[in-house]
Length: 288
Image 1: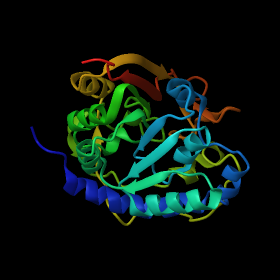
Image 2 (image 1 turned 45 degrees about the vertical axis):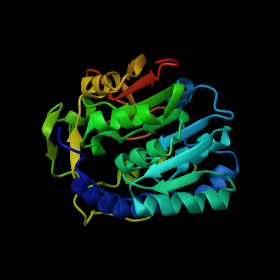
Image 3 (image 1 turned 30 degrees about the horizontal axis):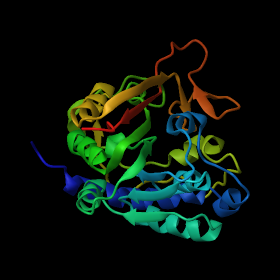
Image 4 (image 1 turned 180 degrees about the horizontal axis):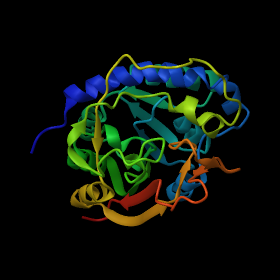
């Protein structure tokens, strides 16, 4: 079995460093938004996570920490892990400026799994969401890592964009395979915040960086939903929930998409629906 492609992960780290600067340029005073009680979370992930007060939670691929701090505000003891230097530096600064405590660790999650497991770190909940799976080169190692850091009875929640939606370009033209064993070479991180605008920045979108072109290439990995769920089952986790949604929370994939009052982007009238998101909750058994 081939190990995770850390060489490609490092390409993506540099690509995310550049994109994170552009993303945050559109988001104005995020600290003020969070200090005033704002949250970047959507109802779907909150329902799947359940009560958070006092729970030990790790946010895998946490990006720049906005969701992580929103989770911490709800009472969880949160650790955020991400490969991007820029994202983690911003997350730590945002934690200081908001006064919301959280630990942020800059690491490839495969490396972090090894360290956390060797130190017998355990969490009640693990969480990952929205554009995370496509950066994972080895689903089996990822799933084993999740199983290794969950406490007995602990759960992992994933809310993710659907690979069917990823098959289409912004004009709703079929452009990519559903899944592919070969990495997708043209995977540089783009400025999806500029495309989604108020969908991702409900407190006031700012123009910020315009016409962003990422100078750092990136590589993505195309995984089907069965690939994800099977990897989690093979790691000994029990499936509790699998759901599909015909809308996208916050993120506009298609030029003709229509946003509703809950910041969900729907396919336009006359276009047959297909799933744009899916959710999975798995649990580590309480006893061996």
